[in-house]
Length: 471
Ligand code: NAP
Image (tube, rainbow, N blue to C red; front, top):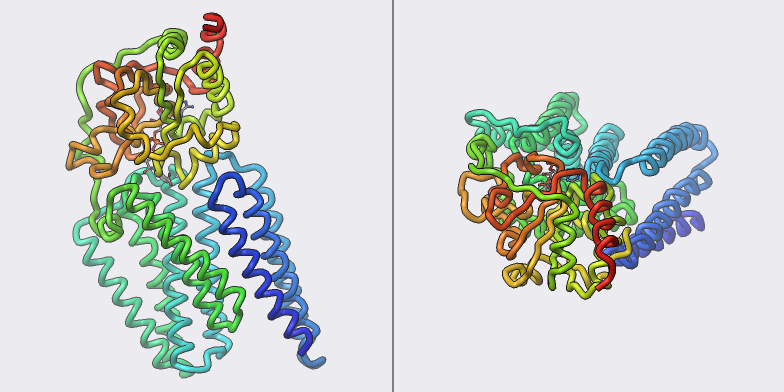
């Protein structure tokens, strides 16, 4: 009784730590402490679960000991693998790591459902139905996240589409539902086994089929959606297992993921149904690209222009993360500010490869938050700004999103860098952005390319401003 009380209380304390941690993660200032707090919550509740060992009759203890040994092995393997990956992962590979970890959460929820069904854990029709719904969502999140991982990791470069795909997907979803219903209705009978197995297979396959046709530019919405799915599946299975900590943690993740999905969809100016079912944005339609020539300049010329400008807006993108040039960039910015230039950073909500990617990079370099502006707050300022400096960004400044209906990014709001008097773009070559389309901005009269790795170019720009001396 006492142990039951302690385990129950630990779940409540852990849930409190999760909620506090999540709140702290909403600001870059407190984000690290938020992650650590939520981590403590997880350690606490996992540790307390082992107390159940002392809460069973002596007869049942040997059986439970086997389960505990299996759990310890799983924990050790998980801790070693994630500890190693967490330490060694490149910042640029974080999004795909998040995708795969999210998939593991969905897979765990689906496994819990399978174990619950196999062990006759379900006690009522409602219980069974919740188990099946959680399993369906968990399976979709598991295989969908694996496909998202493959896309983010560059292993799957093009959306996979075929004629009648939407009808095929709808039929597969319907079949999953029917098999799920049959599993519930025939539960506990030998006839219920086959529909149960087929249900899991169909749900896993649906996760794959649902994600295959989605274009690269829509991945931010998809990742957030699967995050919400995993949370929901975990919450539902928490109900099935009668575990309040799991329920609360799942619902917190589910609702945070849902809000993030809504924010990402808004940032892309797309409805969720449009992202999931429109098969929009086949890059082939816009593969022709703009015509004309790109002009280029040396880093020192670009740096000199900015040193004598009165206002500069910097647009960071994925390439800044690849080059890990955030420290050099801030060194350059501090020199401009010391010389009286008004410098601001403009952040697009889907710049980089994960929500908040650019904010994290700039925070890491120590850029003050009052220099960083969200898209809606700064977009009107580009037209009256001397220089827009684009560093490793492409899709988020592509004016084609405003004009070309066949473009994969059509409708996505962009940072209006193209309106500035002068635009400098630092990138290595004429490569396209994540969506695979060329950017007409780079061919505009007011645009000059500064070719090279962002780290190398910014180092040269710092040297050039140093050579000019202070104003
Ligand atoms: P982007 O469109 O992917 O463009 C990045 C550019 O950086 C490339 O054109 C590349 O050109 C350049 N680059 C790469 N390495 C570089 C280096 N070392 N130095 C200098 N430049 C370098 O990036 P974005 O403008 O940030 O747009 C983000 C895209 O990712 C959007 O399409 C968005 O939908 C998608 N996405 C976002 C998320 C999210 O949650 N934020 C998740 C998934 C997908 P070169 O090769 O010529 O150098």
